[in-house]
Image 1 (cartoon, rainbow, N blue to C red):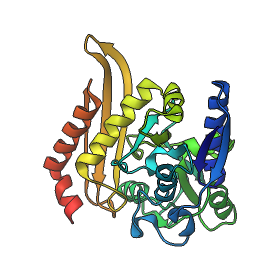
Image 2: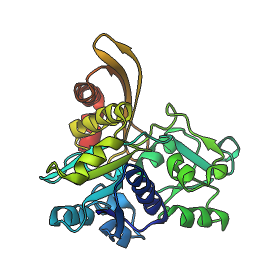
Image 3: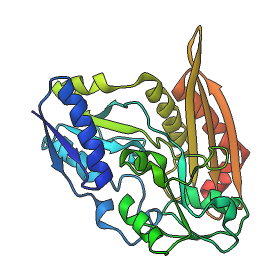
Length: 299
């Protein structure tokens, strides 16, 4: 029996049950254990003010280390780049659409003063950088709660991850998918992370069978860049990698990234390609730092 740990939100449970079904197809028996995290308990404060990454994983990782669960399913974008000793990401399944989704009144029709809801500094900074005069307002809650707040008229539009909407069957609510050149996604957005103890046990071995090599390469590059920048949720950082084509040395990874000030007034962007995801992420991180990201991160 493999005990799977998950948060209790509608999206988290969809993700955990999706992985459970895939493990069951491989012959494993599974059971779900719901764990409330710090991030679930704080619902009225922007995440950037309370610590950001790790808020949705700490208690689950403690349960893994204690042996209370055998495997955890996370949204990869919630994961810190450094994991607790004894734990590992055993698999990254194939990624859903990593783009951000605009829901509500069309972006092109929204005038200056239009209210746009998001809890993400990254999204807010890139919306402000458009110079359209949008008013960015904090939006917290599960996906269904955020959609309800939009429908109640609290916002003119909201921005959510396309992946979550698709997984929950709400793709028809998407007004438009925002091009990554306009809004660079979060590191790991759209990807799931399967975390286990790094002990060679049954859970780790079967989880490895769910790994998608191209997705793993892409998000490894994104996470290497984030680690180089030492970024969390306090500064807007976006990174998006794709894997396309091969050379004699292996697959080619294309990585784009940005670092912005929270008000969108300063933004450093760059793009690079390579075959080694970790080296590529570090190299692009260095280039961003040298081009002005260091000043933004330090301010």
